[in-house]
Image (cartoon, rainbow, N blue to C red; front, side, top):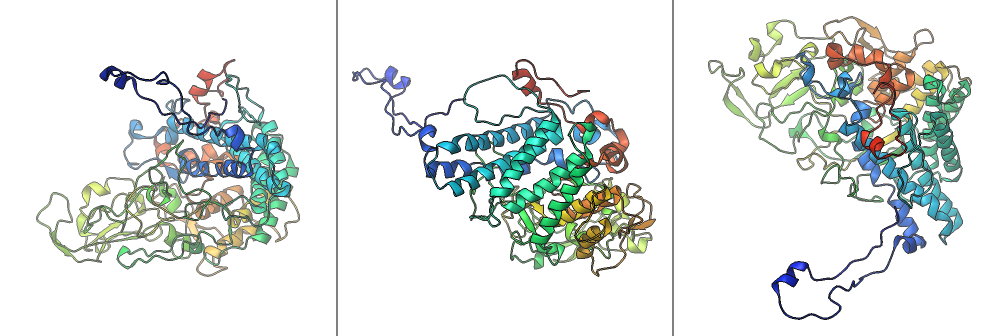
Length: 614
């Protein structure tokens, strides 16, 4: 559509005309423009063009807060609790992949709209650049930023939906035409954009948060890796793509050193909110290649008003991963101590069992194992609706303990008084997660521990008040990309074989480098105590082993559905590990692509085709 003029008008309303009989001048209905500035004029100025490029960054917040299609319905996250209840009607469509997962699904329509809105803005940058009088070198950098962001959005679109429309210039007229372009052509365009961006982008951005050469190289490594797998032989991929993926991953590894500790990448906090402290956000660590900005010194400090996700304009990572301490015994209501939580993305039983709770520091960082009373309570009832059993709880006392999967509580000596045991707190085993435990216990422990990888202490109570910058690319993933590429046949990795890259990430996470961590041999079987090593060797490294390590390292980051789709493991791992799918899954090969939003089909002419099976 044509750019709208930025014009303000001063005029009397029709109601005033009815109420008053006094005369008026001949200019009553005359438009009185306060400003005649238009986008056509403004974007041709250097200042206007810079603002146009800046406008491409706010939507990243909205895109990355639209996480359901990337996290839920996988082996790591489901959409809700109550796994022991076998009613299919309680499961979300993204978990069981039933007929409700169609073109009218709100999550599907929302992400599609956001990605194309961002593409529209980046196309405007590319189309308008030639008419802007400014330093050519700086202009080329700004266009490269836009082309990177355009490539990023097309990469997400083609993975989710396959063949999609691919506009590459600013839209200036209304049109219903929406031709779907073959996936292989979209991948070629993505690589062309990123290659040009890599050549023109600086190593260090003029403002922290802008796209850099490293971001382009990282995305190229992921794009080449994905194209190499060549989904349905439709991407134009070949074994040469795996070699390119390795080469770009090595560039990232050389330029972005791993943080000393996993926890150094996330907000500083204590598991006990009574002793918690705030400190450095850790969101500018040298390991981070590119991130969505939420602090005050950013390109934009508000979620884009055209596509509101929240009213606060902040990060919501602290409040959306289910579990929580808001209802713990001794809780003092809604406070910033534990903050609000929503069960939008709930960790599966299986993912807890992919860690060695004793050796892997990521387990301690990612999950709340102990809950504490925020205030004292006398004559507390640990068993719901049973006034015969009473205990006293002091401020700071433990009120729940989630046992490690490999050390469950067996005897009553180890269990809480809420189920007839001896402990004055709830003790919950992994095989009880998602069950009826919270309906039996008065401790308010819930069904599962909070996944609090991104927890920020002391922020105001609410859903989206976080200030932590959300890492999109970081070099730990580049090590795992390299390992996967080598496993698929690429050669001459600068660090050596696939297991060397893999173990670099693992050893950073372990309490002692070189140790032999043990995960559950059957993560999907919550009652099995059989264990297996997850240290890689040349003999045991596999795609599944890398996917497990990606789950541990990148849990909650914007990648999981893409990982399962890329490797062809979606159906297998969803059926094995997603608790809802285990009870009533209809997942099939068609679900490797999402349905095209029905609203897009209805508006197109000739009518856009729907993906097969929907």
